[in-house]
Image (cartoon, rainbow, N blue to C red; front, top):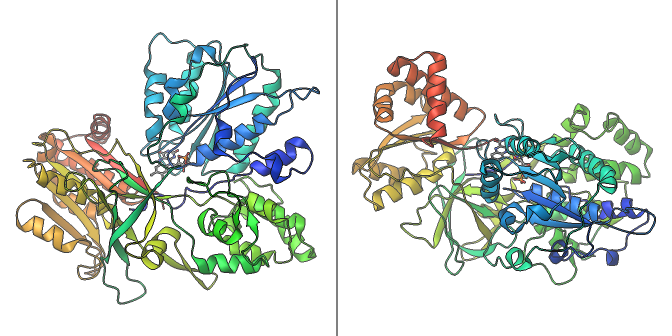
Length: 609
Ligand SMILES: Cc1cc2nc3c(=O)[nH]c(=O)nc-3n(C[C@H](O)[C@H](O)[C@H](O)COP(=O)(O)O)c2cc1C
């Protein structure tokens, strides 16, 4: 299941931050790019600033690192004095002695269905749930990352902000809510913070943070992925026309990684870009690819020793799909061609923020290569150009196999993305990496993304109702495998949907075998096999009695797949079930489903594409 397609892109402008803060051109030598530079000991009393982030997909970390660099290079006065920021992942919040901190800059996203990022849950529970806490000595500001397409926009940042005010902490600058990584909002918040920091009175305190607690985490994770071998790859669909879906099943070997997962978790995969696209970008830049460059700050471990070739950097670390608006600004500044400059100025007439519809509709319909071609007379210095590109992010796929059957194997289901833009055929990054470029027996960097909000009931007697059309089926394969393996006595109901029985009925033989031997009650909607379209929500409406009976007996409901349409339509169908069979009014049904969500009996693993 592809969990992130739209929401993954980063600025990584630390080089620019150095240039603007120092007022002169920074050389590569001046910039400490080692990962360790973030673990600073507080050595100068009265200078400490805690930069904390909570991230699911890496954006908040990227922002926090940029903030760290900006705070570290902020001149406090004419004497050259500087602050001493420290960067801490919310995962390690227990290493912080809050009584000794004076300034907290918190960058945190919202994930799942309005919940904190997995690693930040403990921190949020502690911060929101601890009684008799007081933070009146603390100055703080929150940057909340989110996406307004989700119903609970920036919920995590918003609740922490409110909580800190309730705890009598002093807000340095108001919270900013960032919609889909809008860097103009991020940069304005950083600027506002930098403006006030020099005048904040910071309590003198000695260092207390045990670096051991923070740095000794040796397990594989998003910043230190495991190289997993792909052991199986098979096609799940039959393709006769270009319209037909192309979906694949891949298995990865986790032996030797010590990675553990639970049914419902996702596998993060770092892809490589399509070499043909990298080649096109190199020729647009008139570069050979052999130029040596630094790996960017977001590069995962192991970090390359020394510089790497531009070609390798573009293959592994830079997003060639999503364009940073700053790139347009840079190319406009550095073009020798009047028409290009006029066009750049037209695009940026209303600034770089998301309110500039002209610019953003251009950015949404252009990839990096298209922009470079439109500004082919622009010749910015290479390091500046790279500093205006977004980072290539890992993609997340719900794991389609149960660890109870095999803890050292993680399977994923991926719908291969191919499309055309401006008449040119294009390829989705990770899905074509898996299908076209990564061969069986080759390895790629992976890690586990835990999803504690998508879990089987601990009571095996309870029934489960799973609704997962398309690749939304993936976690349910793990669920059913596990329920069979653990001898669960509750019923397993699955509502699956696809276009055609003969073409994209994913895992048909497994599902039909389970259905025949009584392990699964399977309902399938084939949307295009008859004149009238049929979807999973239509099947739910046909089954109202049955669903209600299970719900009354304590069943858990799971929805996986498209958030915008499917999850919404399914929710409506479930509301109808409650109204019809439970004799409820609309408001009562709404509250009933909300209650189910609150007690974790109605769980969603949904995403916006
Ligand atoms: C599966 C998924 C669920 C999400 N849920 C929410 C949500 O409920 N509310 C919200 O404001 N943003 C939501 N987002 C958007 C993220 O918060 C946004 O992409 C953010 O930039 C991610 O920051 P991070 O990389 O630091 O986690 C979701 C994104 C994904 C991929």
